Amino acid sequence: MDERSALVAGGARLRSLWTASAGMPLRTRVISTGLAMSQGKPLSELSAGELQKRRALSPPPRGPVSWVVGRVTPGAVIETVQVPVRDGRTVSTRVLRPASGPSDTVLIWYHGGGWALGRPKDFDPLLSFLVEQTGCVVLAPDYRLAPEDKAPAGVHDCLDVLDWAATGAGSITSPAPRIAVGGDSAGGNLAALAALHARDRGLQLSGQVLVYPATDLATDRPYRNAPILSGEDMDAFEAFYLTGSGLTGTDPVVSPAHAASHADLAPALVQTAELDPLHPEGERYAQTLESAGVPTRYTCYRGVPHGFLNMPGGTHVGYQAWWEISDTLRRWWA
Image 1: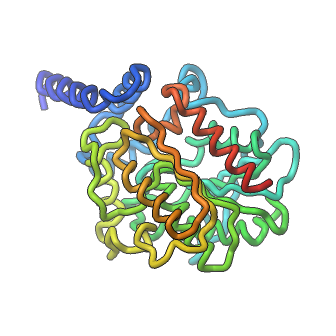
Image 2: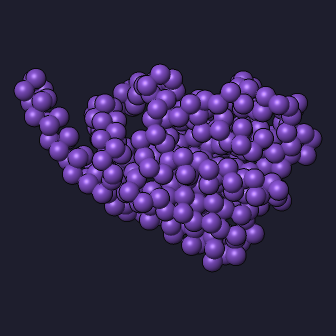
Image 3: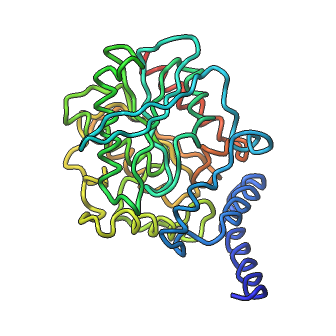
């Protein structure tokens, strides 16, 4: 593509993103559109190699960037441990714990990124805030990603870290920790699967925090051209994740909405973003949990896109969602 063609294509994409974000407040609209444009080609056009390169692009939470993504709070000590999992492997796991001392409450947080992007450290601002506000220890596993590792490799890593934490997690927590799971987007999917796994294993969780979770990988999604995450992006993520895995979107191994039963699961907080292709399935999953008798709190944050939890300074409700999570965790652990 020559320079003129590239400019024309870029201008067309900018207009499309700006139009698609019309329901957002101006600050959120500008930041969301700018972030989407800064990433270059849409996910649906990336090769596997280009996807791997994009993983390294997330900016550090300092300087001007921290105004948008939040700051890492000083109340958390951060380290990395290797957690033993199946097949003789280990999973590098980010640990955030209170500087004030040990804790018997644990939040296992599974990062988002479409099962193909994202890193635990991208969530340091949010997770250090939760450590400071609740006094819990956070474990954030760097689970295997597609397309190098298809489903259910990442699922297995996440479930094995949960099982390890339930045994007392070495010297990181008390011998009998009270555990909640949580995650956003693909991480919300993994947290929902972890909650199902815990019920089936007889492990009593304190709760599950599902932030704009992908719960049904077989569903059609709206907002095909939305900034941050579009319906077309989700199609690409799922292709990276499932193609060649032998699994389909209706398999309960990857889609918690298709589990045989949702009864007897841990209490849930489900948060969705109004202008997000994952909004409908997140809302439906909250309804499914409630219908199954699971204590469920559901909040739809209006006027924001997918990913708003990671840019609280760029929205009018980001920090409100942070506080809702911390308040809910404190209530579960009271």
